[in-house]
Image (tube, rainbow, N blue to C red; front, side):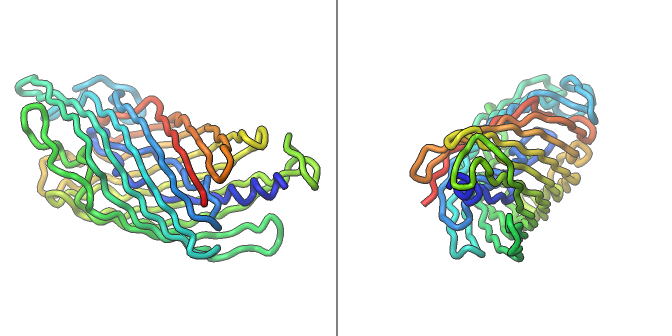
Length: 326
């Protein structure tokens, strides 16, 4: 029946994005839970694409202009196009393994304050791979069978580094596809649902299980290129999915990200230009294509952005993807 099909397809989870986040240059990924599309009892292959154009300088919570705070170079723009391929293998109904391989396409521009020369990087390279495991700690026998999941993982230093600019200068460590660090991931996810009448019909009439989740995740970053260490990260996420028809579902999430300041290590980066707090609303849609396949899209709208000193932020983020379960 439709209600059971929806409930089985929509077990929600939070896993960290495989690509790096933050820094004054605006290197970033979307803080969004793409794993909520999973049926945890089946293996899957997911291909997603994120588009993040960070062209809005910001000081604290207000908009700013390029160079408003004096620095060695003035950040102008970072355009991120991130492609993630993830294979998830369901070892059992209680345990999963996942491997994520990212491809990073990035354009970055800044102006040298001494020479006033515009420096530009335009590169593509493999990012850092992520290996994750997910274990169900608890499931209730009472309907709708709420459950608690533990996610652990590690980001490996597999990504490309030392990308050169238009004048053959190495890119700042904060915008390179790979960080050179080994990072640890840990998360808890509570999953549940509610029965509501919808347009779907079945043996139980129009009563349908509407799933929802609440999750918290932390990321502890190690030292990477030139001993640079990105600030530790906390994410809080909640979301749900509502069926408009048997083939078309509405998606909705709230996503919060808190980033500590970076440790510049042996680089000349300014740690005071890193870290911040962000809250996003992420409405979306999903189309069920049949035979275990679906396509989805999100628009991520910032509700609150507070950065330390002057940093680049985006006005809106976009995520599209295709998933095949088997």
